[in-house]
Image 1 (cartoon, rainbow, N blue to C red):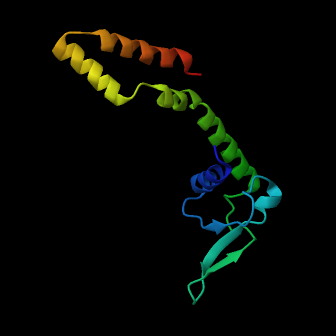
Image 2 (cartoon, rainbow, N blue to C red):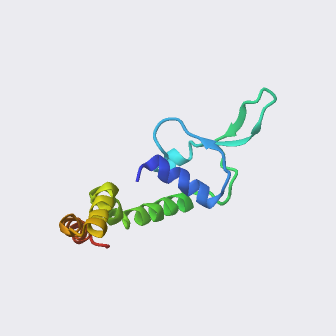
Length: 127
């Protein structure tokens, strides 16, 4: 999972609606996390008022890092599903094979489809 997605999801999961910004690399260390600009309001000229002092007690580096680790573990647990999605025969093949079997009576394409489908499941087992 991309670090920027992981970071933004972790923040959203821990404190929904939090506004922040960072310049440079994604905060994947406590040092970088301490450089995040936290939005605390809006100035009269419609620009964000920011501070590097984190105003959110729910968003400590430890909590954010733990949530990022949890998200990565959850994402990794579905590697098999992403691999299957890419490897499964396309829907058009299913429709053609099923229709030919049901209407035409010839199950040759259907049998080939089932073999492909089952091979994908065998090659990419659930963890």
